[in-house]
Structure formats: structure tokens, C-alpha cells
Length: 137
Image (cartoon, rainbow, N blue to C red; front, side, top):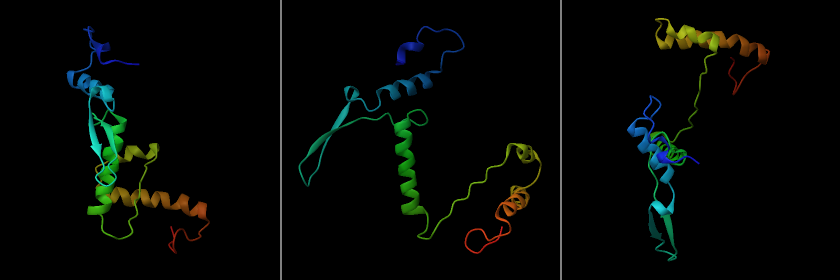
């Protein structure tokens, strides 16, 4: 297992910056009771339990990143997005077409071009049949 002190004494260009070392040290201490905890209890049933401190890191600790991602998603669905059906579309540009993103074309026109280029392969896969709810590609 890695330790926070494994980088000490390395005077070469591979030694991480101090903020990287600090984030790594916090990550190693995240969720471990020996590095601090809080005692919590339920007012209803009287049950008490211990909660280990987290590092609250941004970008290094998978546990804290997952918690932050879930909290952000809950905030968006509860307070930001309207109470309407929401559909998310993700456009992945094929590697062969990524060079086109460097052209001086506005993003809206680039999207129109990419949708036109993807329409034909999709239409070929569906044999001209309707895709989705009564819409044609």
C-alpha cells in the first residue's frame, strides 16, 4: 500500500507538488476512524453510531467524488430542473470527424453537419422505419 511519505527524499523532477502530496495524504486518511470521527445519534430511536471524517477532496478520492456527484444530481433534480420529463442527449464525435471541430464553424452549424452525417447511417440501420415515438430520423 502506498504511503504519504513514499515521496520524501526524491529530489528529481518526479517529485509531486506540495498540493498533490497534501491531497494524497488526505485521501489515505479518508474514512479511517484513527484519523478522527464524530459521534451521531438518532433522536427518534436513541441509537448512536460513529462516522469517520472524510477528506472532502476534489479530484482524488473516489469516495468523496461519488458523494459530491450524488449530492449535485439530487440538487439538480430537486431544485433546478423543472418537474417535466427531461431527456439527455450525448453526442460522441467519431475520431475521424474530430478534426472538423478545429474548423472556424459556429458550434450550432457543426451540430447540424454532424446530425446530417449521422442521419444516413441511422436511416440505413432502421430501414426507413420510425425511430422513437413516431419520429423519423
